[in-house]
Amino acid sequence: MRVGRNLEIRPLGGGLGCLGMILLSILASVVLTVVLNLLL
Image (cartoon, rainbow, N blue to C red; front, side):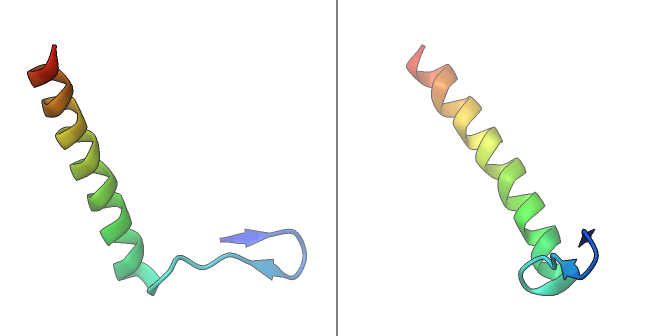
């Protein structure tokens, strides 16, 4: 992902790391939803 003229932001670990972060965030949101439902 390019930002500006000569600054480029690359995800940690390349494409695999980016995919891992997406999967981790989905998993975290599911776990948080389940925990909140158990508490309420």
